[in-house]
Length: 257
Image (cartoon, rainbow, N blue to C red):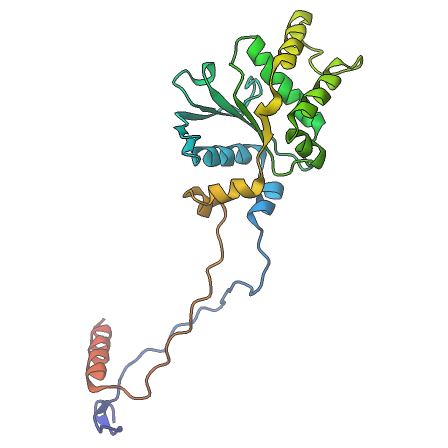
């Protein structure tokens, strides 16, 4: 009978009354088990747009903290019309791009970045120096989801990079800088010949992600599936008297509502 004690192993087990049946929604939606998820590399390469890529690059560059023991005093997104070949500027002195700074050139294409993509961007930074827009950066980093093998090898060999760039610049049918005033184009060519091409490099996407993972932005951009939790301990076969009293009082409060 409800309210009376039902004999148990200790003869004092109570019968809980008026326990409501658990409600169940008409449709239960669950996450498919084993469903494939995008890796950060896949998201960056195939889902992100150019603006997202530049924002991501700013987050990564700000995570550097120190460069050779010196902090970036300012990290500024410069991308857009009139950026003169600098999408993200990281400045090491209060003089900004008029002092020592690093240029991060963001390129987000569906294909791998090649020399034909890199040469015009390199021209822009030389033009900016000739026109007095910026000082030449001490580092110029191409940031792209994919870098072509030939360009990647050239960036590892500055003398060959410079030779190939100047050959493309000097060709009779060259398209590089042909929209410039002839005097400016001549000055750009002279500057390129005087410049140490070790300033140019490419960022590795795995290294970028490793540093970006230390920032609070990483979890927001690349949420991961929760790891499986360990199974809960099974319920004991017998209730202790003190446990039964505690649960009964909880139910009493619940039933009052």
